[in-house]
Length: 204
Length: 209
Image (cartoon, rainbow over all chains, first blue to last red; front, side, top):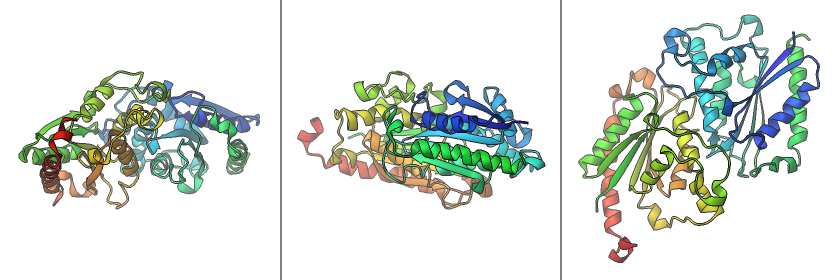
């Protein structure tokens, strides 16, 4: 069974800084034969915002029929879920926030209906990666995005200790990340370390 | 001078806790003599920012939809109350979608330098953030504030006040909250009084410009 990596490229700008960072991480993982990677650009994912109807608290599923139907299952099946987002106006891009909010169905399952999100034998084995880039150089520029990212991972049964972060500030124009002194090396290292950790957890 | 107050409801859930709190604020403003209007984001048609940065060159957004119409309206009023429930520790995707679309104003200010809000403009334009959250945590609104700050900065409004109420899940809704609705009404009334005084202070020649 391959190690399954599910990656959401959250930027509306294709092949910009946050997606490049993601591509570096994925490429370093892809060097391993036993890895299956799927990258989903959120601009093409057809994920509507949450309607706040709370129907998932009783139905255990979302009333909306859109791209999330597919990604719901993929999120459960993956061993590692990677989320990348640029920082817009001090937060996640709206497209990414829509995905995070639609994870409400997992929150209802976990905390309201008290049902398992992943099968018991896979619990505690999954990892989450959050990759982000910001144009501003402020060191606190990512702070307001992180609580929403944590919510996303918590409800899909990935706890704080199992989330890894790589966040690069001061990259604004398209391609700026190519000139960053450490971003690429850090991304490759993160990909390799994540894969090693997953193998250990999955006894591979 | 007539004070105009615009309420923006960012909740996908009509007439829920957050919109009810916004309504109370707008009623307060109306009772003080302001002209009030409410816009419900879920009824508008706009797409999220595409991150194309075309506005950095032109100062205009390449997508001309309801978001731009709304920004034009925002720039005409004296106070904006922007309301969103807390979803996953942040504002809703609808409101974040609107805020991200304000990038063209940021580009006018900081890239093209064709837009400048002097301080005496900013203090006469008040922004109020209205929010509710189900959770009881004191920090539940913290990650929402920076995006709201960015929004008010972009439109040249002073981030004047918050009207926030957490622990909705325990109270059983805003109508059962002991103080929030009254606080919102009072703050709506008060901001109009403050703005009346501030705009009355403008010398006649400045008013014309």
